[in-house]
Length: 390
Image 1 (cartoon, one colour):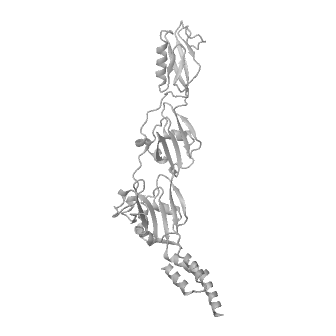
Image 2 (cartoon, rainbow, N blue to C red):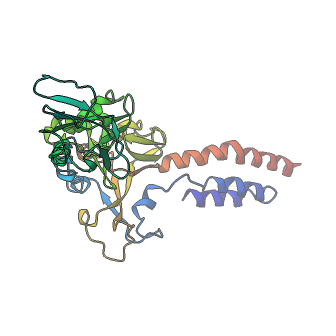
Image 3 (cartoon, helix red, strand yellow):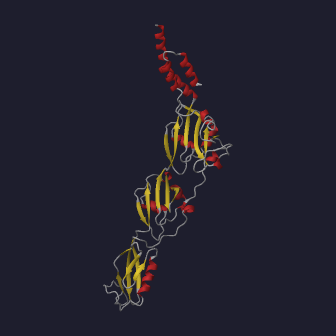
């Protein structure tokens, strides 16, 4: 209607300034975004097929509820403590005891009792790619993937018949193979060695000096075997079952507010706004972007655009465009004039990568048109009339 009025006004004030007037008035027809009615009729006026426009109320808010994400106890499982399993890069110390008369190892003894036994400490061994170490008179000993007690029994068995009542003790001097990395929004990134104690997720966070942000705004991601699993840190703290034992090679990452939604249109501010994994309701989201602009926004024209799980919305009657995950396009309409909507907004959950759009009101568009008329067209008409009278 406004555009039609613009054209009529331009025609009435032709001919001398027709070209300039039409160009100026045409600018009033250019809108930053679609109006409320155009969004409501998106199923008819868009190249994406099957868009459903759903009014947000007490019945539709349940579609936004995200299914509970499996916790670390379900995805990672309860691992056994790593223990002292030797791997490449570890450094070992081997000590051998012999009962007198001991003649096999002639180094100076470090004996607990000279009359009963003597011990000999070998030079420290760095475990190489082969996974073996060479022990005098015992030969090449496979150590990679074995516990310290298994290595001790192997050395002792090979020295029988060569040494008198031999016994071996193997100690892990430096653990370089069984580690986890802790990175992200922590005080300092660390590489934490794993021991027989069985270090957990919270042990790793503590070793890194804790998180920089409050726990309720931090998400913990554990990468294992090419997969990444996430949970809010506050949920791990509340539920001890989720504080699982880590495995060799795990990467623990602390993420600050890893999810986001985008708001555009006649909102308090246009921005991409981050939020935490603990969740965000639509009411909270509106508060975070400063609400609607009083002089521009259509209170019946707040829309949330989302690719939704087909099971969460009614089936479309015609063909539907789907994304790579098989989701369907849905627009949720929020009528801020309806008091009941505010209750539904407190339950409606914002998802990662949602887009919120606030349409301009028709009154704001008309005021914009009048402003353009007053500032540009009317002075041109006055000049045109003055020229015509002369």
